[in-house]
Image (cartoon, rainbow, N blue to C red; front, side, top):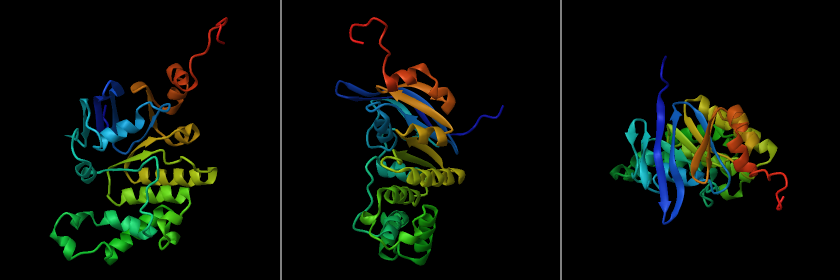
Amino acid sequence: MIELQKIMKIDRVTKHFGGLIAVNSVSFEILKGELLALIGPNGAGKTTLFNLITGVFKPSIGKIFFDGKEISGKRTSQIARMGIGRTFQIVRPFGKMTVLENVLVPLGKSFYTNLSVFSHSPRENSSISKAMELLKDAYLDDEFDKMASYLPIGMQRRLEIARALALEPKLLLLDEPAAGLNEKESMQLKEYIEKINSNGISILLIEHDMKFVMNIAKRIVVLDHGSKIAEGVPSEVASNPQVIEAYLGRKHKKGDKNA
């Protein structure tokens, strides 16, 4: 039997904030080319786990491996350069820049950290062509000269993904990309994410829209109160009693005074 290659391994990761345990001994793997969803009620520890993966926080216990190398405790910039890109719950475009400029900024990563910054520019024709390709994939090429802050939320979310892709990640972390979108915008986003995934980029997705998750994820990991309570394909997770309880709460027993 051929073992599928792993792009990431989360190994018994725990994060304490004083007496609060935000993530509690969580373990799972992401396969190369996989689209995995991370779900759970508010406060389950999902974004904290994203912040542990991307170096915003350091694990209190446990290790995180990416592409065979441990990344626990590395700086965010180091982790980004290794091939992990991310978006945020609150969309954060460079509002005073155009749509094109938003994507050109990360395309300059190869020379920002050395003296070649004085002899090169992200506005070279090759960079502009690459940026326009990324915008076309995000259905934003017609908006290239508009100020990013003027775009509707659905376009801003796709712009943020295109900007993350300019770093050429092997793994893309998407934090609630469908939040605040209408049905048409959600469909465009779904097509865009599936296109990215079909190009071989692994994706870890946090999302509260269960319809969106069930229609896009190949596998799902569920957190509740910082702990992993389920893992499997969408149909398995949707029928898991622990998952149903986590989202809907315990059913009151018959005759309960508080029912």
